[in-house]
Length: 281
Image (cartoon, rainbow, N blue to C red):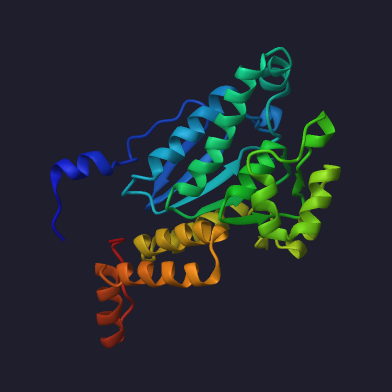
């Protein structure tokens, strides 16, 4: 496949040398693992970590060496939401223009997660509250444990449940009525109930959670990366389409995928009774 150096410079990047200041980052076999790593406080977010996560997921949109992402928390918890002392306290005293800048920034993190082509797997153990619940919700797959405690607790701090896309995304995962209950009450959704409701794809042991999430990510990374990115894009875009629009959009998307080397590879491997080795292009 031919390439153009100037085009590549403006539309691709390598994440192998990426370093993060406010969360953990590792990259192995095309799988990136992002670790929220303030375990002494159950991994809360700060102004800085919000912004750095947003910028990281924006960069992943152009990354050619990352094909799947695992999002996990350190120390047996996922994320306790916005840090009470470093975010919630300062917000009380900010004027409305600054508050809007903050809420738009947090929303931009969700937009960046949905816009990056890589499937994101959230490995959720323990506390997953507030903005932490939003991060899990915004991922493509969610693995939990029986210890998982998911809470969209915005109303408990005097705020609306319509935070960072919750009213748009959560009903599409678990249904309107169940989402309404969680957003109105802020109650905890346990792991077993969360699996029954469809919030969690699977429940795993806490000791094997990260390993299983990374194994799934590796399996996805070994698949046709370009086609997987198209699937993610269409899953997101078709929320606002009618069935006729969706079918036409999928026809165009699938025709594009039929031009890829991975499609040809799959055919030749099938004909030779071999397992295809996808290159993501």
